Image (cartoon, rainbow, N blue to C red; front, side, top):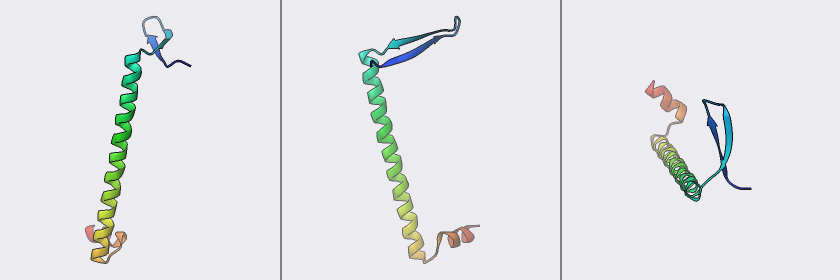
Length: 72
């Protein structure tokens, strides 16, 4: 099955299914790779922040609920 895109002519309502060019396929793959890398970086950042938070709470000897109470 070929990679396609749907094009809608709003003035006529005509819907066409058009095969992607080689350049469009390459761009789609590059976009997917960039998205995956950005998502992985975001997840790594979240994990690092969670670890820092857990370390700080452990150093303080309090729970997350207790920290919330202190911060209002």
